Image 1 (cartoon, rainbow, N blue to C red):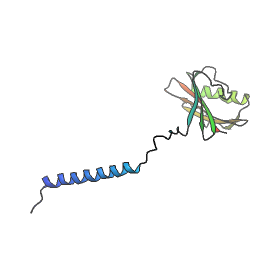
Image 2: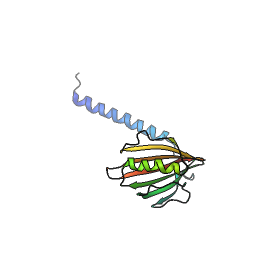
Image 3: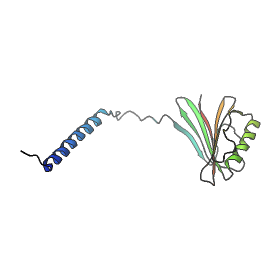
Image 4: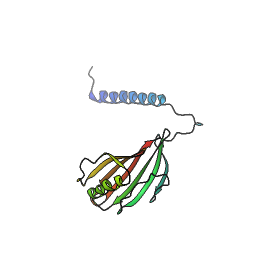
Length: 158
């Protein structure tokens, strides 16, 4: 008795499909769904308040680069901690913007905790500053060759 490829291949495919279907069925049964009467929980990093083109009331005071356009600011929360972020754009180069912040933020009482690694870079720069109980992560980066984005993030804190 000889077994031809015409009978082996369809039999193999049938077995493969049955095993795959069984696996998918068992896997779907093992994933528990919450009861219908339980409200869904928002993501761990919930957005509490956002304003397009304006600074939200609770946003920490910060010098704003003079030739910039405000995109948005927002407040976020996670496990009882709150944080803020503001986003601006400007046509000015990264190194010009960062040089302004290196002068203006210390003059406004901020202490540079981590200075930019390369203040002359025109691609992307990052520095960390502190003031009282606030921590500021300031990122200045070139977006598309013509636009520089300024991101001021105040990480989650109590």
